Image 1 (tube, rainbow, N blue to C red):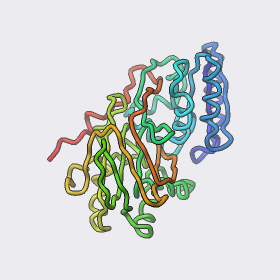
Image 2 (cartoon, rainbow, N blue to C red):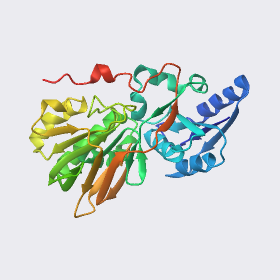
Image 3 (cartoon, rainbow, N blue to C red):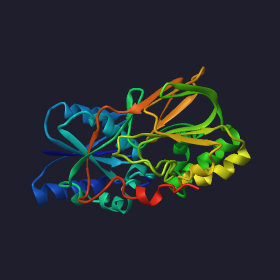
Image 4 (tube, helix red, strand yellow):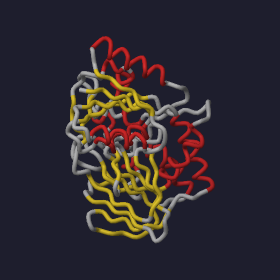
Length: 315
């Protein structure tokens, strides 16, 4: 079996390459493993690398070393290949995917905890021709995510702070609602929407949690649709929304377990954010991916570590 570290050298606020190299060398010398480190050179490169290696048919374990974008790219490269599984070493600013593992997230920082960890399947979202693991969102939150990279390079802002600054800019200068037709399991409604968030996992935006009951291995997508609201109402809504308390606003936010979600627009104004990676289009088709993703992690870890604690109780 080969252990492949795919490293995004631009992830995070500091250069983590040497730390990853040292981890890889430790696995090689302490456990006599076949280890390789590869640096990504451009957007999409991690997907290309992972897919090409999977096509060799060798048994592979990938370590996505970066932020959520790197995780997303490696997942897009390996899904559907039974000879490959992936894990994550977080060196990004948000690292929202790993927040689904609760306190076990810290164990992912050291490859020594990962290399012989158990493998298990997790669900994935298919949005048009791409895979997402956590949340596929469209609306003001996606526009915020698209712009957040402008602020994440600041040395005084962490992942969530960068998201909040981007949210403020979009809120003040770009408006909230967009006119779309949203179709859930064949039922279409045309009107102005603030957010359409299709959730497999619970976290995005540096720790925002739109649907607390979303779980990554239950075979269900939780779709939260939020109507266009005024700025004053949005200010009241965004705090509870970030904590999974959408149920406090039943007149604005509607959650379902639709299996087929389509967003259409007369203009190319749909910004769809897939684990932080954004596309702009006039049509988005979202559903549960046919294949599950092979994942491995520390012994005893669970991608639903905090789901029971954070699920809404209703009011």
